[in-house]
Image 1: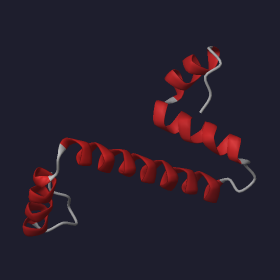
Image 2: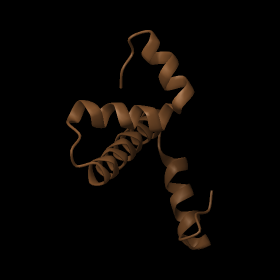
Image 3: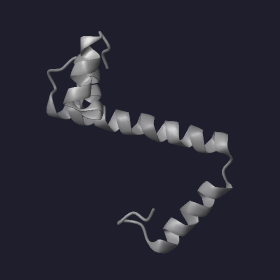
Image 4: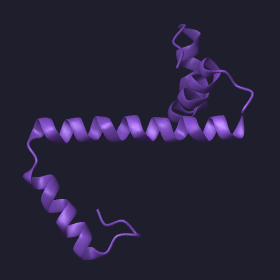
Length: 81
C-alpha cells in the first residue's frame, strides 16, 4: 500500500522491511499500531470534550470504533468500552 504522503521508493523500502519480519514481529507491530491509533483517537475525544472523565472517553472511543448500532447492541449486554 502506497500512502499519499510516501514516495514510491520509501514505500518500497517499508514493504521490504515488513516482508523481512517474522510473523510474531508483524503481529506485535500491528498490535502496537492499534494501541497507538486508539490513544490518538482518545486524545482527539479528550481535546473535543475536556469535561469527559476517562470512562466516558473510553465509551466514546468504543462508539467510534464500533459504530452506533454495534455499540448499542453491545451495551444491551452490559459490554462497555
